[in-house]
Image (cartoon, rainbow, N blue to C red; front, side, top):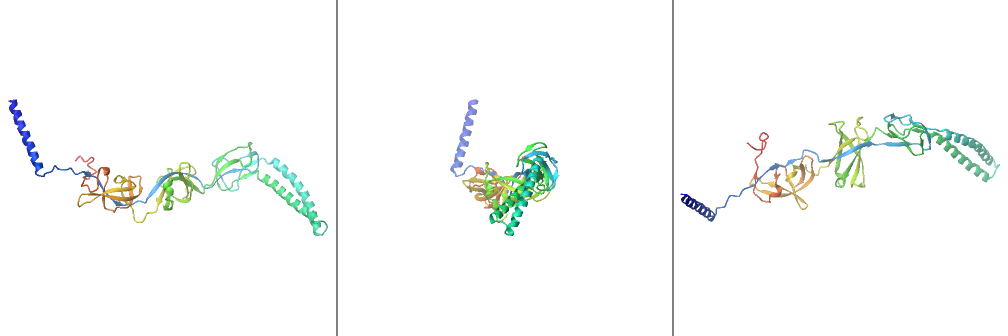
Length: 358
């Protein structure tokens, strides 16, 4: 019984094989599977091209105020955070030694001045020689400068604020000895706040295309501040970055030096409005970028060269040449496709059919 069943099975296999060979001999080919592709429609960009960089605020005007003379501090009547007016006393030095010196120079000045003026008067009446007159005139100039210097040293024992602002730091306290030029009080002007950012060389080369600047701070969520460009450094630092200084045009008391910020640099548009497509649609061959454009009539994809301007943080890329709004491009698996290949668009998955299971 088993042998008979095996013989019948063998006959069936032979017949099926013969049928298949006949089909191939008649020119019929096996079906070729056409790949499904995901498509996206190229659209006109609705956002301005820009890049974002972290930055930090600093005072547009700051100073480490110091004495022009050396000595012992008598008092520092300000503390960190105090608001001071221009000309307000922020530190005093013990001026005793300088006052003693001034008194001595004053006596010398009065004596020499009287003698020199007498000789000058005699010369006017032809009562003395040209040589005596010259000595008297130069002697008077010398003692006058010496006297003025002594007075300046006494005046320099009082340190005054160079501008309206806030005390940022106090480096020395009363009874400490400081040298001339040694910082005593650090000040910054509140009227102007700058934001400093650092940009790479590729952005530095596009500086002529910068159009405007915005800043945002975590302390003022949702608020945008306008910035004005001050300077762009002409020399890269050790990290090959260029310093950009921008002035905060909108005054806000919440923004102070030392805060972190996010700065957006906007660029001038290059002629026509750019086209936006997903960045996954773009692939490179050598130095050229391409996309596969889908032809609705034939179902064939064509490799098309494009020129990009920027890749955005949301995964979209701006194309300035090679595409038109409304064209459909392949957005997935582009590295496995070829120019002129027949494809089938994949079905669009609705928001209520997650995973395409229905």
